[in-house]
Length: 213
Image 1 (cartoon, rainbow, N blue to C red):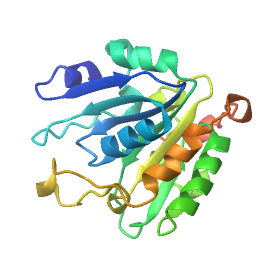
Image 2 (cartoon, rainbow, N blue to C red; image 1 turned 180 degrees about the horizontal axis):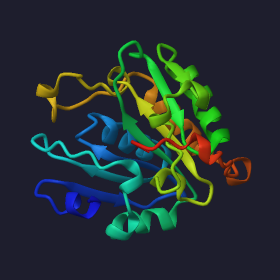
Image 3 (cartoon, rainbow, N blue to C red; image 1 turned 135 degrees about the horizontal axis):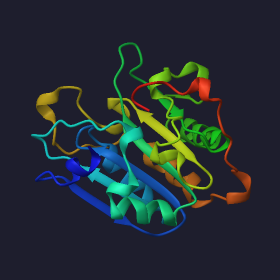
Image 4 (cartoon, one colour; image 1 turned 30 degrees about the horizontal axis):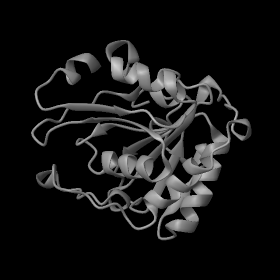
């Protein structure tokens, strides 16, 4: 499924290898603004970057657990290079317009990102308690690319206001301007990441949801 998406006309896959801290946005275009947040945070911190961006006329959601490096040389190179990764996603839920959700298996890094984002972007609520995150948005599946590096990673789910995206599907493909402080909060942590302080912390398989992992 992932390989088919990559071969679709208009889909752009890109990788930039810099430091061993990586940012990803493989639902770019589909989840508007995610590729912009990831690219700007990577550029500001000297981090590596992997993105997949769909054209405005394509709406193809490949679940995170099906984003397979065996189907992408670029993704395989990226995951072989990085030690930890932050995957930028977009979501929208009624009643949660300001909640930023931080899932993934590296819980110490999630806590550090949450603290940095609270300081840089106080208008949003940073939710890094897994029990407070909907199961399907926790990003704990072992096949999810965010959990494949040696130190695991953090899945950051941004509401539309945080990524500067319109919830109106008619506006897909328009430029997105991330909310003030979101990119800076992510980049600050990436710039000073120390591997020995962020060993992977695995989660019980009972927390792994059956869908959108």
